[in-house]
Image 1 (cartoon, rainbow, N blue to C red):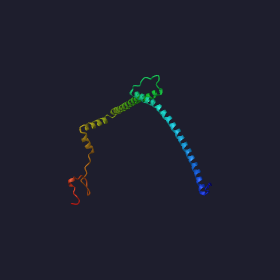
Image 2 (cartoon, one colour):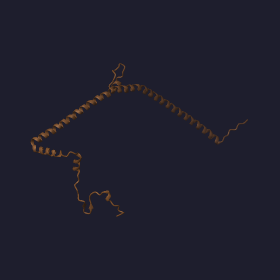
Image 3 (cartoon, rainbow, N blue to C red):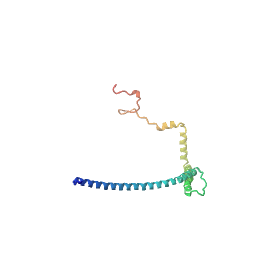
Image 4 (cartoon, helix red, strand yellow):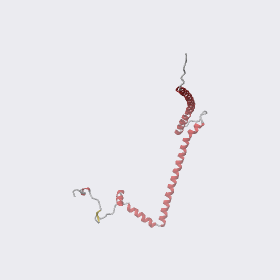
Length: 189
């Protein structure tokens, strides 16, 4: 039997395409393996970091509970196995509260001193004015006594806000108010 191999150019191109496809497949498999290896490494690293966070959680909860106790003023006495960092962090809000109270007390004292100083200054000014110009002070007091006759603050406000009366007409213009019953429609006029 005789075998005949086709020696056409199409067969040669087919063999070249097959070799190229095998090489591409080889590179894609290598790229896939490299990608899988990188993902495995990354996920392992991420798992280690999450384990660290899980270990940190009880410490954070301890800090939170100790801080709440310190805010409420029931901080327990330090134990032999208690973390000093947790205790220090828990004491910060209580210390800030005492500092805030001291600042408020100081601000109140300063405000009282300023008010007292101003009151004394006005008192001294009044005494000096009464000593050197007694007639001016007497006139001022008499003016105040005249205002005492007006008992109603509403009446006083009306007197102060009263608008001077104007004539009803200035030239050909009308000045004043017109009741709504006197307004005529332009179409009926």
